[in-house]
Length: 543
Ligand code: GLN
Image (tube, rainbow, N blue to C red; front, side):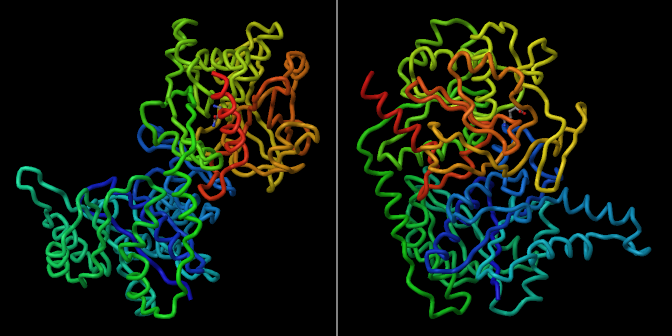
């Protein structure tokens, strides 16, 4: 029987609920339990696919092609459990499905209402496909008291009544702020937040109290008393020196022990936390450091490149080095070569990440050229690979080489795809179709050339990686690009779509059409990132 843990947040947003859910799941997993984490997003977008990375951070893509909230990335990185489409739902999707059914007449004349129709749909989503699981953690986005989250709270309330008495748990994450002028921690916001939750019919079993200062027993007891929970169930959650310390830190504070106790489980195996000890040991005791320049567009907001940031750090863990990331605005490089060289010369590796739109593209292409000419390790991801191909085509004499994404061009080295094969069969798309959900999304296979660099990195003839793009490198320009020493070392199984390019004569030059960063884990760094950072370490010894 699957047990359900509902995680809500109070007081303020950005308390790190996602990380908390991921850490709790990792702790339960360390005790041998099978876990899955789900995210309920109260906003009205059907999925975050069309939301600006500035507003909502990165869009995380699953193997089954869903564009989801970046918290699913945390979940997957901390548990290794591949997230699925069915692990993220938004109010927008729930309402869309209900309205489609209403239009079809499926409700047989009934009045369609929030209760029961919306709440039933939310409950179904939580309960779907859980037979083989021990724990399902459901994180509710937003903060208690938000208008949008009310149907989700109501669905939780109902589920807590409908499931077995010891089958559900409510964990509420709050903030215990420190008021410097008074020199005191304040418990009142937590009290109010719990009252708000109680007014919706949900009594929390466990409080996770985020705080910048240790919470003394006196305050812990006070919270317990006013919020109607046991003092041991008030878990202090202090700021951590690294996200990788969070599972161990919460374990020290008794989080998993209290969760099991609240479920009445007394025979749980002891946790095996060796994986997390190894990760933190590598993270806190680096034997060197490298600096990687990431030349992108959304450099003002690191959440926009969340998985990339993590994957680079994982590459560092694999090599026992600290990775310093310099976020460089590609547009800056369009002003002059001198500026570009001054900014890129100190870098031990240059990475051009995924992105959309023309802005900064010339700066990205110049960065590719700099890396190629100077022999600096280069990693191009999705748009980054497309830029590497345009750079090669220009080198081969196609001076106008460009992508149709940036406007009409006579030399479409990168162009729109209108047809491709997926597991469901031939997919087709109109050139001017809707933006939402019209990309090549999710896991696709690629075949690797036997004697290539990437073949030795992956140690395999065939790989599966996640995609999220609308444009493809145009095979028609393959010959001129190859004439510059660019090798097409990974192709789609039908041989039509370039998936990986590399420069065998260069110390490390790889461009990939997919997003390897989405599958990297701290305890299992992605081989491309591990190898790229190893090359950066070699480069750091040269400069
Ligand atoms: N904008 C490019 C495309 O749609 C690249 C997308 C990406 O980098 N994720 O093909």
